[in-house]
Amino acid sequence: MSTLLSLTGRNCLKYGDNSFYITVSTSAQRFHSTFIKEINLVRQIVIVEDETAIRENYMDMLFQQGYQVTGCQNRIEAQQLFRQALPDLVILDIGLEDEIEAGFDLCRQLRQQSETLAIIFLTARDNDFDTISGLRLGADDYLTKDISLPHLSARIAALFRRMDILKQPALESDQPILIGDLSINLERLELYWKTILIDLSLTEFWMLYSLARHPGHVRSRDQLMQDASTVVDDSTITSHIKRIRKKFMAVNSDFNCIETIYGAGYRWRCH
Image (cartoon, rainbow, N blue to C red):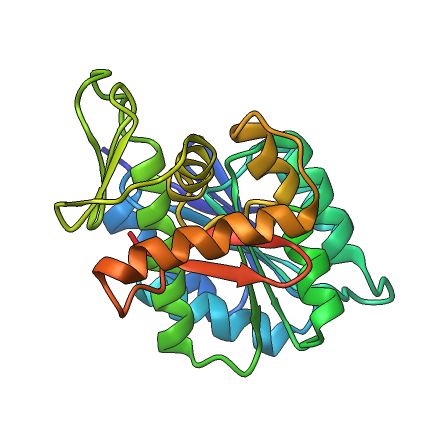
């Protein structure tokens, strides 16, 4: 069987019937060898970054980790690519060329296309306002460019693990849902932490379930209210979360699985 690898246009490599947009440079050779070995096995990642050296550095690292990686340098290129198909993960910078908030615009559009697509902001902008804005738009994580490459790789792998958990088939109604040390029985409305029953109110139970069934995802106060079928003010939600934490800490003093994302909500950080 013959193999065809050819250039079909600007920043595009074609392998058989498949086209992949990449930055054509020395990365192309690494792409070829990796792609030949793992054509149907790797996860697809798109990096939207306007600085060529930075983009290729991230791409090279992820190629070496076994991912299939595509690079885009601006919003228009990314939109053209996303109209064809969505990858498993999109890594976004915020400012792209002369558009200072292009990454935010892309995140908003991607969330409209898919509620489950993994999105990470990777940017030099490290202020609280931008962080909260990115998470509110639906990003799964917000990282700054001073992060080390091994740390970035670990965060990506952790995000994919959480995605795999969410894709697991539904269990029988009386069978507990296991999320790390957490066991949830929806039929009996019982919740155990490391085999110890946690005595939660119904509202607390459904709020905790809302957090735990989306590990790593930020849940806003409105989402927690909706999932708990209640309407209360923000301070009441805060009080519920404090009580939930207190009940877990009564059986495990080191419990820290509920993370506060100031201005955005809360997320379950253990899996």
